[in-house]
Length: 211
Ligand SMILES: Nc1nc2c(c(=O)[nH]1)N[C@H]1C(S)=C(S)[C@@H](COP(=O)(O)O)O[C@H]1N2
Ligand SMILES: [Mo]
Image 1 (spheres, rainbow, N blue to C red):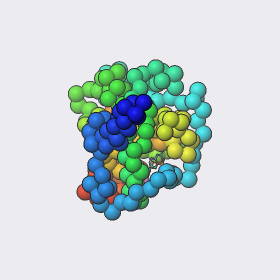
Image 2: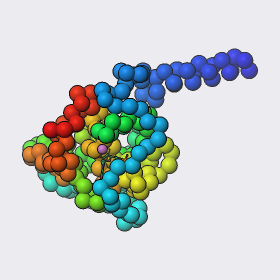
Image 3: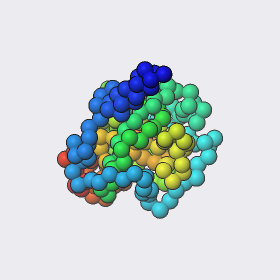
Image 4: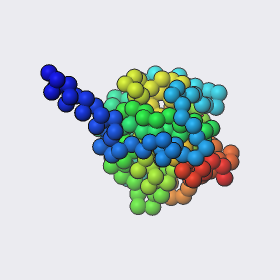
């Protein structure tokens, strides 16, 4: 029994040190981008509208420069391969929230299905509240996850449920809440905040807050 407990503790310590990925989590200042502070809660930011979208009415339309344009219903979306990822979240208003447990579909999974045309270089994500945000295709392939669950619970309406985008390597405004469309483009087309003076590239490690 003592031996068993010892093994359990060792396992837990290993997990605490490495996280799920097996890669040691950065700690302290290495983990916190400049000018940010850590929060334990999860603040809500929006444009004053929180669309109420029942799952059975939600859909995600993929259009623009793709070989196989598609619209996914909730059931279609849930039938796709699901990823469970633990990621930090950095808001440009200076708060960061560590170790968010997301469940959803990786953008690259969507790409495999819709088959981007060779001249597609950027995407624009659009939302039910009229919000848009743009990303280079390469960044989206690396970092964009379309999530429906947070900390083991369905994503709430205030946080963009039923499905939203999340990114972890760039500021969180690049993750569209209440996402309903992704358009593939041959050019970069700045979104809502990018037009309103936020940085186009949004790298928190370089403090790319404003343009
Ligand atoms: N549709 C939509 N998505 C959005 C926004 C928004 O106003 N509308 N705000 C963005 C900003 S500025 C941030 S910081 C995050 C906030 O997500 P949260 O409210 O879940 O913390 O969502 C981003 N995605
Ligand atoms: Mo934000």
